Length: 124
Image (cartoon, rainbow, N blue to C red; front, side):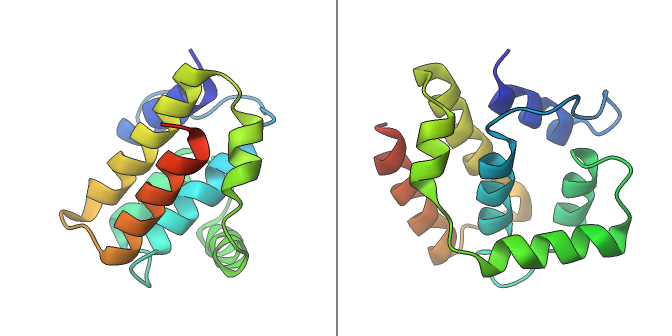
């Protein structure tokens, strides 16, 4: 199971085991889902709960600070592509981002733009 799939598993069912260990793609994947979740200008309670699922042991305030710091930096899709050389992991990263977009039951223009840029950067 690739790291994007592990993220997806932790996000889909927070009662499952939290994300375990570290992976070279973690920072790029976290940046991706922060930018997707924050693309509409806010992080809702449901989205915040998802973030908590993949960051066990981090307080809500610390998590909000991390989200704000990630959101303030440009999304580096090339770093994500380099961190995910496997084609299946790239597809799974796109599925992860698509799933995050669907969490608030509407697709914001900025979210759709990120998905398009992500497809191009990952060669999908």
